[in-house]
Image (cartoon, rainbow, N blue to C red; front, side, top):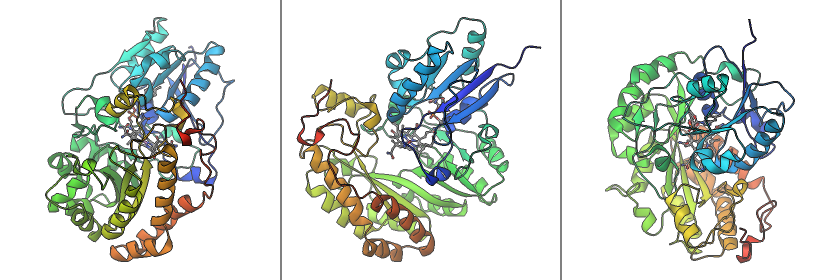
Length: 443
Ligand code: B12
């Protein structure tokens, strides 16, 4: 009998991580691709965060996933395998948005979700007729996917291997976000019985939901939360703060074992603050307090660099966060990702500084802001991060919420990341060029 065909799935790394690699999450994207692979295939993983890529190995197919900031590394890896005649398939958000770019480095691209098309691609490969593009188009409101595979992660240490999705998509369409263009406005949930059955196979407590907005449809989320109440899991996920308008949802969330929830507040200044995503008859401060009172850690993410942000935005945001005291504030630099309305607008206006995808990671300025220079944006972002993680700010936040010890632990961890990096040079090391004076435009 012929040996099983061998598939190598690769998660490219853009930086070398030390011991913190043990606190990373495995790629759910690749766990799902593995689950959709017919059983006759042997599936191997190279997670570059944990190990070197086996460039000399024998494989029948190599599959690589890529977010935008990983694309350049993904292409380098793909080119090396293809030089040896090993076929490469690229998938994930970046190849989905820019399939023609990805095809310069791959034999095929999966556009969108793998589950509906992957078995067909593999059988076409074995028949010697693999096409360059396999496209899946999401439809309906039911998400039907196989349970993700965790066995092929063996031998590596992650924060947890218990990552899962209850839904895909988001009911909102924020101009800077990739999710709704990617899923074409569909918002699908799995059958609660199916998701609860998968959760019952988890043998550890810590579980992370990687949904874009797990509470985005409260009526569909509630049966899942009710079912989780008896499972003894401790879980974290991502949602929109509006869920806290519904007191029943907040209490179900706490009963379900939720220990942390990440919400995008995005901006406290200007029209962005009134975006339908956040606009509500409740004040954000009230909603944050409701969640905080349950003892659930609330991580609030803010973005700097919208067109109505001038240099005063940093101070305004820091003061605002002192007032409403979410457990953990996180700051990002606005990053227009290809495929978003924001990217199209800035590109049309000639405001993109470069298209060196490896720098599209929220920690660098890749566009020309309207009311600041790129350097002011970068320096303001750094200063604001440091300001909210000064000890007095940390302690004041921790004292305002329930679950003080847990909150303190999270804040200390986050503070380490912010204060560990003392360098204040601009442009940051390894960034795309002298962006500070706006002269860094590259073709
Ligand atoms: C979980 C997650 C993370 C995790 C990733 C953990 C991990 N090890 O993978 C963490 C928290 C680390 C993370 C970090 C970041 N993330 Co993130 N993250 C997500 C999130 C919420 C879910 C991704 C996921 O796992 N989905 C579940 C899987 C099953 O779906 P999928 O990825 O779409 O995969 C399917 C298909 O794409 C396809 N596919 C994917 N890969 C491959 C490969 C092959 C070979 C094939 C055939 C098919 C295929 O098949 C899969 C199954 O259907 C997405 C939002 C989203 N909806 O994509 C954002 C998202 C991917 N993240 C994003 C960003 C920007 C980041 C950060 C850069 C932000 C930051 N600076 O904080 C960092 C990068 C950190 C780093 N250095 O790597 C953006 C990416 C935008 C872009 N164009 O790149 C997204 C889309 C969020 C957004 N709203 O825009 N993120």
